[in-house]
Length: 163
Image 1 (cartoon, rainbow, N blue to C red):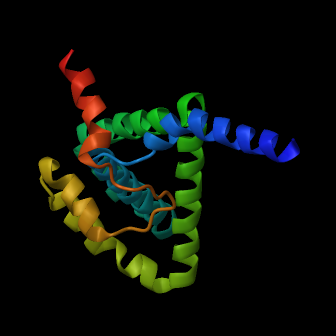
Image 2: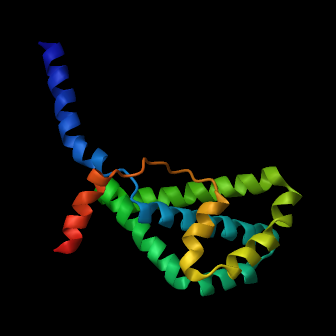
């Protein structure tokens, strides 16, 4: 009897968690948003560690629209994936990513700041429409991983968007 209850409890858990797990994939626009957020966080840590505050402020002013869109897409992903815990999960992701970049700066020593100027120059020379591509090409480490959505997983979003 205990085994059957355990099995039923596990089965119910799978059925209840199924929709949440199905939504945990990353849509292309969400992947781009997280790449942009990783770049922004990396530049923020760079600015704090390497006295590049003005360069960081230029980056923020130059890409205000793109950064805002990335924020909205990230919030949408974490809300879709974690429901009411979405904002808390996103805040945790941001904190963890900033800590990882800070640790990278410590491990890299003087090389970290040496690479700051070229990165800021390249970022500021990037057209706004290409910021996501630039961020993806930098391949900045991220602490959050999720599978890419398949066409079937992205389909409900398209149907909802048409309404």
